[in-house]
Image 1: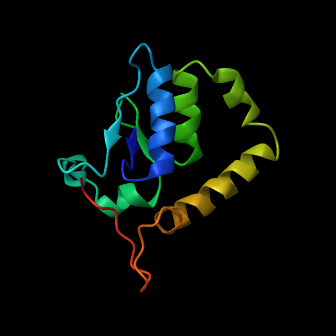
Image 2: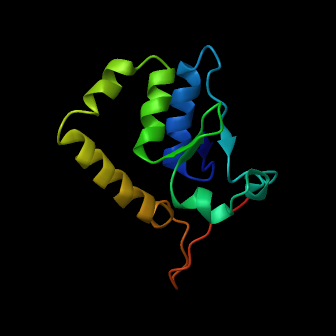
Length: 122
């Protein structure tokens, strides 16, 4: 899974998942790390900044709330994931995530007064 290591909220979520991933099922890749290269995945940096992405062992890409569902399932929280598939809950989570993804840089203090937002490299 690809995460923004310069995002305080994101890093808290990743720390939680790392603690729960006792069997090492998840490969965590920080898109804000100096050595991260989006091009090595055939993508652009903005592709990874715009929303959370994950790549399955077979190479299939997943994004958005589905990434979180797969992560939580991988760390043994399947019953919680099942609740996210209930009618109404799915739509609410999708709406909430889209709102967060569009505003994440602004809400985490990484936008300039002119509105330009960037993800700094470490």
